[in-house]
Length: 188
Image (tube, rainbow, N blue to C red):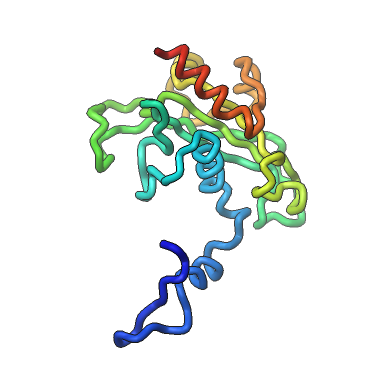
């Protein structure tokens, strides 16, 4: 989609287009940070097309033959403009079964279906300081799934504090590709 595609009624173009629809329903970027995080990580890796355009997929980005799952959280939420949310942050790490994937993974047991997690944290605590298009407002914690499996077992979530206690520190946007390449190189 380019955005200029017109809605059609009785075979005639209307005055409104797909971009109008996007502006109407999806322009609150604060409520789309999960998708923005996937986009940001994909761009850092040079991946230019969404690979998880279906509602539910087993991982978000394929890169160098590895499956990367992107998880996001933030301190600021547009639905809670007046009050700051808890400083405790956590990310989902639930195991999944490959049987619902349209491109069967070949793995029907419940397990983590990815090779690497990228945990993305928008660090701002107000609308202004959390502006998601400013890449300096993000921290990225990159952890091999094997570490998650070993240290977290069947847990469904992992806290930011736990990630840090495992020795993983925040990376900047310009460090995402370097860190993921280093992890993949160690896997080979």
